[in-house]
Image (tube, rainbow, N blue to C red):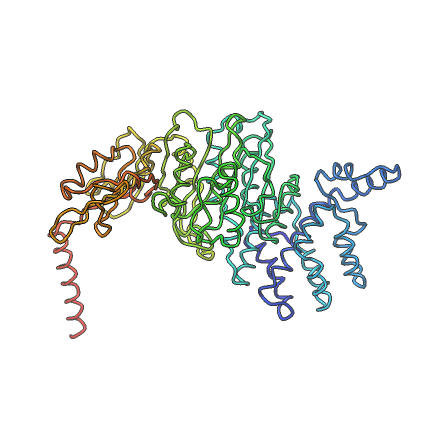
Length: 615
């Protein structure tokens, strides 16, 4: 049996099966063989230690005319078994009946496990392999991999699956990042949603909680959350729920949940936005990395119908974003799935790009969604991640943390954390992913979140150009600059009131004038005797929500346009979170004399080099 020291080498060894497939299968089809066979080998290896006990229980209870399944599952210590007399190795030992015996072996799994192979369309792939005389070679190769839970724990197996999906996506020119999220991003999100729940993390507290991912992928977020909780409190139990659109990812997620002894009926296949398969459920914790920058036209009819017919009783009452990006629909979906405050409340983390922070003017769908979550005091924190963190995009991304059970010190407030500089360069890029957050980075961001205080990042530059960094918490003195060096301070964590993000858009009108310059008055209805507005002179102003619009108008508008007035019927309230503006630090240019000196030095060097060339 082959064992390997790390995830990358194991996934590479498994992917080498593609060498057997080349010619009979297209590169875009390799994953359709490799992924289900990897799952099959994993299930076979996990069941192997208890196989004899399971079969004895089967024989014992069948003789008594009693359904043996509960007893077999107890013997296996899992929620699934295989009742075949074969193992995969046994299937291979009878090459003349290989296809028939493999099919019988698959059918001997518990229904929940069989369903996994149905979604992989496994029979189609084995038929093709058999016709190409490859079935024996492929099965022989997979049997050589030691995928037992002793050799490869669940955490590492999840990483292997994700790496295989990435390779599959690259081979088929698909987007790997649609299927899974980098593990360090998940670790950060898990740390954040559990950070304030000390009782749950206390060893000995036999608490049971639920967690949900509406874009479950291969189940990475759910499994990392369980591992985190059990590391801190082995007595706690996390019941996992999820829904996934992609059949292959769904099948792998379901396999992972089976091995983790979870109830796989809680993992559903389908489009979460148009068909919420867990509509009657509320959850304690939730995590999601929805597709962003992806239009939701395919589900537009169902989403609009729910918005219009159910309003706030449904998921999309506050508003709908523009059709080109549906990520905020998942935000609203998660808000709707939160356990009620009176029942203990909920907390969730969701990854979004920069667009949901500010896209959309007052009254737009995006602005109304922001208005809803801020006025309901649900937004706890927003954390800016480094760029180049995800496999399919290098753009800026943000983790939003929302809860309906804020601690007293956070009520009415939102914390913004700029973690965009907390990263290290990867030794090898994976798609667009060139950076990763280290354990120290995750710990620091988690501490900033727990402390719920303002903080600055001090960058200390020595005379030789070397730099070190230090976090300066609120009330602490910044470090002193070394001799000949300097210290640069930049905001790192900031606390705002919810209303700081709100504004009122006022429409400023000015009167029409006739050829003689006289104001034109209305002749009928409500406008009779009043100045008629000139649409060509119309303007809008955004006034902070906590400022009186008439005082603002008097101070900022009337001195420049004495004949102007506010159209009171057109006042709109909007919300935006201009994240970058709050963390911008102005750096004055260097003194001109210093720049001139540098230019002269460079010019002198260039002239000397030219002189050497002409000599």
